[in-house]
Amino acid sequence: MKYLYLLSICALFAGCSGSKKGLDGKMILSYNESGGIGNLDPLFAERFEDIWAMSQVYNGLLRLDENMEIEGDLAKSWEISRNKMVYTFHLKTNVFFHDHEAFENGKGRRLVAQDVINSYQRIVDPENVSQGKYIFTNIDKLGSSNHLGMEAVNDSTVKLYLKKPQHSFLKLLSLPFCYVVPLEVVDYYGDDFTRNPVGTGPFQFKVWHQGSKLVFVKNENYFEKDESGNQLPYLDAVSISFVRSRHTEFQKFLQGGFDFISGLDDSYQNSLLTEAGVLSADYTEDYYLEKKPWLKVDYIGFYLEEEAEVNANSAITNRAVRRAINYAINKEKLIAHVRRGIGVPAHNGFVPAGLNDYNGRKVDGYEYNPKKVEDLLFEAGFTGTNDKPKVHLVCAENYKVLAEFIMNELNEQGFECSIELVLPSILRQKVASGNTNFFRKSWTGDFPDALNFLNLFHSGRFAPENGPNYTHFSDDMFDTWMERAESDISEEEREELYYKMDQTIIDEAPVVPLFYDELIKVVSKKVKGLRTNAMNQLDLRYVTIED
Image (tube, rainbow, N blue to C red):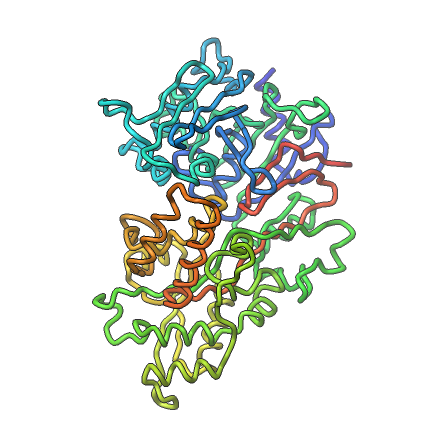
C-alpha cells in the first residue's frame, strides 16, 4: 500500500502540479530551486537551498520565530546557571523519528537526550569537517576526561557546559547545523545519509530524482499541533523542482507550476515589479508580494595585505582611495535602477538595517558625494585626467548588471575601473585565497546578532583557514572590543562596543557596504500561511492551499 501511494505521489509530481489539491483532495506545495540541492545532512548546512529543504525534515533544540526570538523546538524548557556557564534543556517526550528500517520493526523510535549529544558530537568530530564546529568552541571538558562538556542526564535532559559565559550561545544552537539526527540511520547510510535524510520534522523524505525532483510527504506522527489542537503540518506533500533557468522558472510559475518564487532575476524583475518595488498591476489579481527585511548585506571588499602580489602598485591599499570609492557610488540610484526598489541603501555601517539601531545611534557612513571623491583622490596623490586610480572588480556572472553599474559609477568619478565576471565557485576561490583585491560579496547572518557581521573583520579569522575575514583587515582595538562583546557584559555595554566596531570598519574602509537586502517572494493567492523571518527561513508547517 505504501509503495502504491509513493507511485501516486511521484506520478502526480511528474507534471506541473503547482498549487492545487489532488490525489483525493491532498494539498501539495511546489517550488523551485534553480541552484539545486546537494546535501540534506545538517552536518553540512551551509547553502540556503539545502537548508530550506532540511528545515522541513529536522528539528533542533531551539528555533527562531517570525520575530527572531528564540523559542523551544525539541526543548520544552531550559535553564541557565547563575554563572551562565551551564545550560540545562528539558526535551519534549512526544517526539519520534520518521519510520525507517534502521529502527526496530521499521518504526521511528522516540527521541532521547543522547540523540542531541550524538548530533553535536558529529559536528565537532574532526573527521567530519563541518563548518558548524565553531558553535561549540566554547564547550568545556568534563572533569579530567577528554569528553566535551555535553551530558545526557537522562532520556529527557541535556546539559551543556561552557568554558566561559557566551551571550550568543542560545542563538547558535538554533542554527541548522544543530538539527538532531538518529545515529543508527547515519551509520546505516554512511556517506549516503546526505541524500537519505531521517529526522523528526513535519515532513519526511520520499524520493529524490537527481536534477529533477525532490519530494517530501507529511509526517503523520509529527509532535506539534496548532492553537486549536489540529495536527501539523496541514500540507500533505512538498515538491521541489530544479529548473536551472530563472526565466523558465518564472514562466512555469505563471502557468501554475510553482506556488511561489523567491528573489529577483534580471530576466523578469522589470516586468514583475514597478520602479517603486511593488508588484506590477498585471500580477496583483493572482499573486501577492511578500517583502521583509533580510539580515544580509551586499558589499565590495578590498584585500588589504600590502605585501600580496595582487596588491603590487595597487591603489586600494591607500585608505583615502577606499574611502573615495565609498563616496563614489550612488546607492539610491543602485536600488532604483538595478534592484527595482528592493533593498535599503547601506549608509549606516556594515551591520544590516534590521540590527544596527544601537539604541538610536546610527553609524556615520557614506553617502554619494562627488566633491569628497575628488578631495580624497587628490589626498591620495591622484590629480585626475591621465592620473587615475585603476581598480579591477571581480564579480559573479549572475551579478553582471550590478557590476556594470559600479564600473560606470566609478569611471564617472575619476577612476579607471574594469570588471571581470566569473562563475560563483571561481569567485569564492579567488576571494578566499587572496587572488583578487577588489571583489563583490555578500554576507548573510547565521544568527540575529551584530557580532555575526562584525566577526568578518577580526584579525584572528583571516580566510581561508581560520574564518571569514576575506579582507584581512586587522586592528588590535577592534579585536579587543570583539572579545569583550562576546563575554558576559550588559546589553548596553555590548551595544556600545558594536557601535564602535561598526564605526571603525566604516572609517578604515576595508569594504564598501552597498545595500541591506530585503526578502522577496511572489506567492500565489491560493497559498495561505507561508511563514518566514529575517533569517530567510522557510516554515511550511501552517501552509494551506485553497481551490
